[in-house]
Image 1: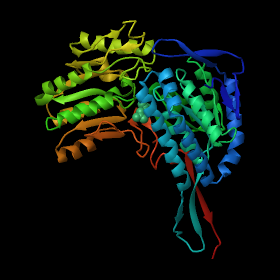
Image 2 (image 1 turned 180 degrees about the horizontal axis):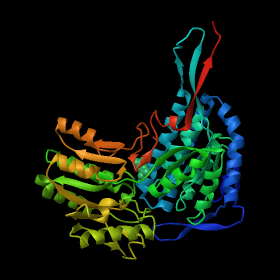
Image 3 (image 1 turned 30 degrees about the vertical axis):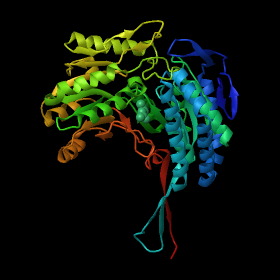
Image 4 (image 1 turned 90 degrees about the vertical axis):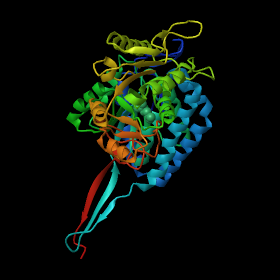
Length: 483
Ligand code: SIN
């Protein structure tokens, strides 16, 4: 286990020696202590990344790709160890921890392949004797700021394209889950990523703003790639205006999941179980509001309730756990607040609806998988992301009504709907204000697809052929006097 910062190719403590504890959310035990870094540590990381940029950008793309491919191989070779580390610090069941390693590795492989395809354009010149070219160049030093819910995948999804493009990186992982990212960076160094190309500093919730502010103020940091909350995304956009950084912001969601009365209901329940309960509901693309057409409402709820009641809740270390602990006590409090508010406003609990406090079986951070019916737009869980294993079900009558309800949110990351009617599928897909739409499908994540939102869910795309462009800018070359 690596428990220190990695700057300029060396492992080191923070400049003032302070540390903070990383805890296992299943039982609150301390897993490790890591540096509680300062603004000086952040600046040292930026110094190293800036110094390494000149040489890394000049490494031929094919060579950068080979290093990324070696990183991919090493990550997969450590699948079990990394999967257990993810589950220990983040809490997701071990099967999902292993799955996240595969998911993270898929981004590294993808961008190893894309590194050699950062092609530009030759533009037909409007006058004789001229050649006009558009070439792609790396933007420079990138600050990568990642969330706790996918400690491996989010680091890989940002660092792999940055390195493929020829950028260098300063990174701050989420305070709750720094250990996986430190382990990944160690493997990147073993794969041949030169010193200074990836630099990573850890910081507690209290000190993270000082680290990030140092990068925001730094002219040499040319881009920020952030996944996290919309308020923090807005802060980054505001504060980076002075140095006009390029931004990729993958922010909050409030995903609708719509079941029309012509849907295959069993497929819709399967899709909802996958989409909603992945990572215990702690995923930006998790359905947050489930709209079911009145004619199939009761039968759908009955099928869903049976499946949700059968979910096994337990620590990540148990092989049969399907729902682990929430990340921390604040997360559980938010879930409880949402459910209590919904019930006070008239919702009915069909399954769950309570914290699990049985100390022998559960630690402090578990919440029972929950289904509520009678949800309405006035409830807190309709307006805010619950980020937990709670399914509020709303009844609706018409297509126009449900599309309006689905879009009635500042957010627009993911949306899902189930129908067997082709024309309706086309209409609703067009009408939903969302960066990602699942049509008769609940499992959307793929390194080959563009991931990102619209409206208050941010901008920029990760993964896919478009993911590399977020780390490149276009330079226009005009060659004259050629005739
Ligand atoms: C996220 O929750 O931000 C990422 C989820 C995913 O990649 O599917």
